[in-house]
Length: 430
Ligand SMILES: *Cc1c(COP(=O)(O)O)cnc(C)c1O
Ligand SMILES: [Zn+2]
Image 1 (cartoon, rainbow, N blue to C red):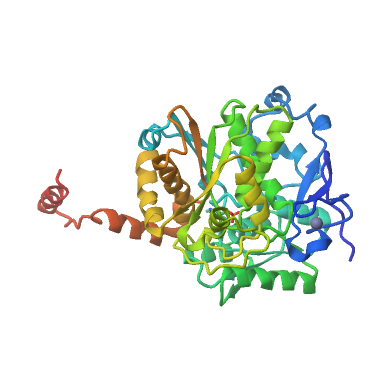
Image 2: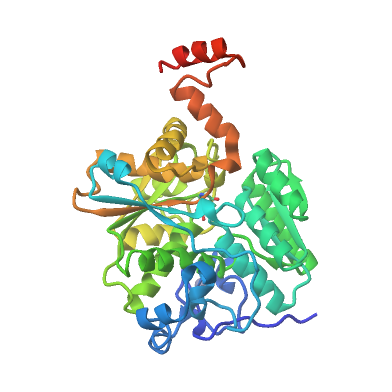
């Protein structure tokens, strides 16, 4: 069955990030045919034409961000303007001021963009909502993805919202809460007895065999487009002023690539006047891109590493969007930063206590990275810094429990009587 070509009002085509070749919207679907699965494409737009709707006045007149979510910026997405989207609204996540984090990092202002507050509790909703909307326009029978857990939950949730069959390949080692979420949404789940990288390959194979629409990160060029809406949102929430630096945790590299794309869009549209520095935070046990930056290795040809970290959402031995992610950091004069699992775990309660935002390990890693950057004087005292919290702490309660046991006494055993209360108060030092 032939599927429809999907494009948007201002989309002009694709550019290969490896060789620079251009393609029209109907010429390719996933990658540049010259480099196998690595020829990841960047979606291109007619910015001059888009300015008539993508300007502060027109956007302000269009309604409220809270009601529109990520679709507030849909003119800059590869989707027809009248295409239906999932009714559970992705995007419109809060920007929280965090003066105590700023004091600890020694910078003027820290804002936390809390994408844990998304419908399925992670940043991945922005990409998956677009993937399911695109699947509907294409007319594909099934949408599929491989995922460390959150992209899967997002695809399952957004598919449920649009009555779209979906298939998920997830490592069997993913946290139980994440797998339960997939099942609750009614996805068909293959628990792969292997790594995320192996699940990724199986999903590629299945999509080719079965003709399913493939949402795989760093392969499907539309996923960075969905994710870029976070950058538009952040800049608009800051009064169309970009922060000086952004801290983003990196696994496959699609989030940091998407945020870079959103910032490049905003700059091209005249919505912001400077490009922030992008800092990619990696777990020490999954530091492919940090290694590339340190050793001057080419991310396209470097061999995969063995990835292991407590931050399952950023465990990627071969980051699929590594070319875009590497460019995002390089072009903005940011850096890749490595943080240990202990630093990541300690960042969970610290971030929660000093900002009120509860993050899963991969998301707390962004704060851990800002602390490292502050110690190395990579951020300056007058700067405004954004920390992207990419997933909720409720996604991995076991990690939070471990972190709290690690840094402090656990709970206080309390007998249910007035004497018990007296004893407990004493034990708590109160
Ligand atoms: C997926 C994910 C990341 C990393 O995103 P990539 O695109 O893989 O780099 C970070 N944090 C959370 C919570 C995620 O789910
Ligand atoms: Zn190419």
